[in-house]
Length: 511
Image (cartoon, rainbow, N blue to C red; front, side):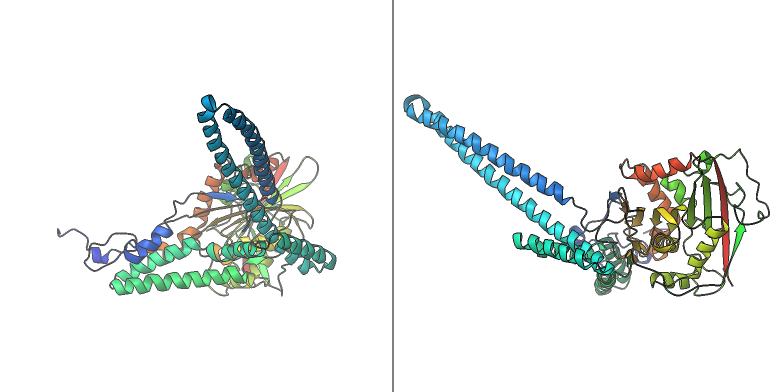
């Protein structure tokens, strides 16, 4: 080793092969075996309709019917083949070999028929299990709504399905339980590898203890979140208590993609110092976001603003607004900054936070009125605020784009729900994997990927929960070609047709 060569004992690399005698990396021994069962993610983007079971039971049953139809068609072929075989056997001298071949073919067809029948039965059984999952979801909603007639109908249907397919109840439980306890695989994998890497600095026994201990703690914590459902908001979820006082102040709004002022605040009184007046040089088509990534990039970050509001005046006389809500800005608990850990805790616990009150005040200052159509784009704490705006606010929230949200809201069929999350983001893990059923209007989707598959020292800084990281993922969603993404793109395209647009940004302080 030269004088300039690094000492491997002082290099923390959980995934590296350490050459020190008696030392074990996260890819060796028992941990290597576990990693083979749960291999590293390639970080590929997955877009799905959401839910633990996003399966069309009608399609499963239709496919089962096709297999039954194929079995019947094969039965007809076997009957014709049997007649031919009898004819060949009558001519033993010339047709014996052909009759033997026909007999082998008939036996093969019978095996195929049996397989087709087995597949059809398996598909119908799976459809029954998934239907029970759907019925369980509908039952919970009916019970929450206090609808005894609907409850009776759903319970009757559930009993009928289970009577016909006795295994359906167990399959449904397995699907829902598996969703609640297995969604956190990536966090557990990385925690285990990280624990091995840290512990290995002190020897092989510490590596085993560190990896097993940290992995087990992560699994236990995330499994609790999944089973308890603390991060899943029902349609009836409402914030309790009151907040404030908070003071909201208009600040110079930044132009999309830049830091220069664009157009003056609307409905907020006199323009802030340094804000340019409305100008025809910035038509709505240049202000409206062109993509999901462009919308994510407008969420307030390091500057003074916490809420950005864009109000689009449409040709039909209506007004559509887009509100962008910041994530946590301070790790403090209390103080002048409303977007802090106190607000995080209050929102997650279902209490009205000062940041929520400030967002409502900003919308009012921008001129957004009750009943107006609103589209929400929000990150982290802001996504919790956006979820409650959709669930209980005075506005017609048509779209909710949530990035790195600690909660998952069942916003109902009137809201397009777009959820972007990283499966290695500890904050997004607070949502407990999200709802077990698909939520939102038709076209709603969940886009998920592993942002940082490696286990590195900087994991303590939560790189997967940075707004810039989510903007990168939004770019992948935009270019994915998935037809569901076209729905949110259509929202932005409609805004670009507005006749005029006003942009406002607001800072907020407690008191």
